[in-house]
Structure formats: structure tokens, C-alpha cells
Image 1: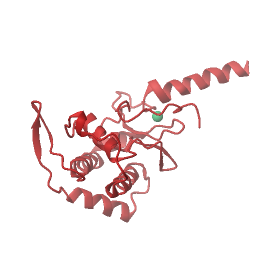
Image 2: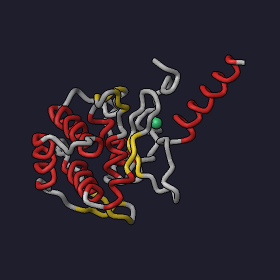
Image 3: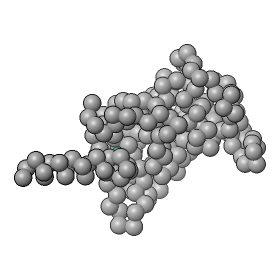
Length: 198
Ligand SMILES: [Zn+2]
């Protein structure tokens, strides 16, 4: 493994640098050749922890199980994430199957409901129903995909990264998901490369 992600941050520390909910969801894994690596959504408890982190749901820590057996919904969620990423990175437009799967999620709101927790609103959470996650993420993606801002969605070129982000910089020249990780690693490599060449 390269030095970039030697220390893979856990779901609680993972950076939220995508600029949109859908992009941060895609960035819950790193990507090599459009395949996820270093997946932070390893099990259902991590999905719940991420949902709390981004404010979709509110759960007391005690309600988040430490670890859960594989859940059938997890495989579907990972498939959704892979297809979602395709919608943003595919240069020739998405495969029909990708669009069909996305539309399925978009049209399925399940029993999505809002609730008030600690003086703010979030989505109601029910055991083993991922509507609270899939529906808002699908809406967030749809909104961005039809917006002129779609052109500003970029893929970080960092090794073993592949994160997507919305470039909000005034000159549209943001290159890295984060200067603190991929940007600095690149600078360090350049520096040592120059030193070696001397
Ligand atoms: Zn990166």
C-alpha cells in the first residue's frame, strides 16, 4: 500500500470534504479503477455512525451496536454507492442499468419521516430500513446531476483515493480532496523527488 492512506481514518474521523451529501457518501470508501477499497461502511453499525455524523439521524451512542453481523441491506447499499459514483465519473453517460438502479432509489422513499431530536429535525430511524440514508442521498445526487455545478464535480487524483468533491474555489482550480491528505502527500513526494535528483 502506498503511504497515502496508511492510516485509514475510521468512520468517526473520516473527512467530509465532498461538499454535498451524495459525494461524502461516495467517499465512504477509497476507489481504485472504480472499485471500492478501504471501505468504511463495513457493517451496519458504521452506517448508523455515519448517518449520525452527517446529521441524517440522531441516535444515542448506546443505540449504535458495536458490531453487527452482515446485513443483506449492506450489499445493496454498496451497490447503490458504486452506481452513484458511476453517474458522476462516467464520461459517456451512465449505463442503462446504473440509471435504472438510481431511479429505483430515487422513487422509493419508503416510510421516510422526520422527527425532532435535541431541538433539531432529522430523519426517523427504523431498524434495518435504510430509506433514511438512501433517499436523501439519491435526492442530493439528483439535484447535483441536473445542476450546472455538475461540471465542477472532480475526482481527486491522489493514489488510492478517488474521492469526489465539488470544487467551490473561485478559480475552479482545486485539485485534491484535501490539502491535509492527498495534497500534502503530493507536495512531499515532489520535494523528496527533487532532493533525490540533486
Ligand atoms: Zn484524495
